[in-house]
Image 1 (spheres, rainbow, N blue to C red):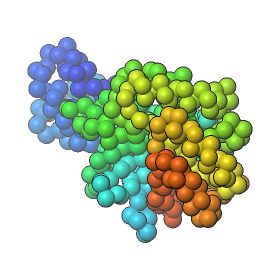
Image 2 (image 1 turned 90 degrees about the horizontal axis):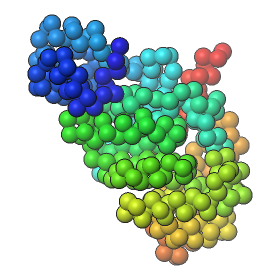
Image 3 (image 1 turned 180 degrees about the horizontal axis):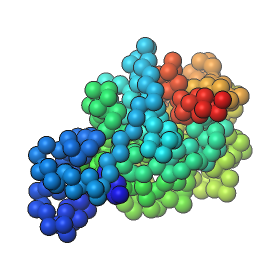
Length: 344
């Protein structure tokens, strides 16, 4: 049975045409799918016999809410979605002044091995389908009742390690007959799989590429991010420059502040050089502690000193708000607890 939610509207139209159906039927179905319906039976403006026929040919799969946690501090909502095969993924809805942002997962698990992240514990289970990523957006909007205006691919998984499915998801998200969200409101986060930067740049998408740098030197970065092996920070900077030259879009550096690891004055001054080399914006992230990790967030004193060095050097820097700290909002934490409960 075909996964119709992973199909672009023009692909649905092509199949419907081959079935002898009028073009407007395909458009009706695409519009219903973009609203988040769970079955063809809900498509009331389709004839009953057509709905029955479509049920035999196509599947509409919606995730189940396994857990939902709402922060008493800031209203952040974290979902643990149960997928059709029994796996689970996390999604976070965050409220900002400019609108509501949903942070989605792109893989079940992750193979990148970042030492401070819960997502990678247990490794990669499988790739997520375009429809599953789209469901994270649709179902979060429907369940929360909050209109989603921004999407960040910063949850569990490495988006560029699931390249083809992520690109199709972005096409579905952006399609005028689909969710119709401007890619200018989308950020894609990568640990630095530079071999995919050219592929991404050639697509000339208007999204923001956020590079999870987390350390400006090879010694520190390799220690906390195994993906740096065989690539290196210099090669990453070169890839960022080429991406910006090709697309005309500035990259941003995500930088988790880890006590005693990457938050020294030396790290700050080297980060200044890296940011200026690429013309990157720097987004500092106060680390959320993961139970299985020995790493701790930087002290407020170290954070302030780090920020001062960047600002005095003319680097554009912001500090990400710590949203949802009371509901395991960091990547992989809720899923990890769920998996551990199933192991007992």
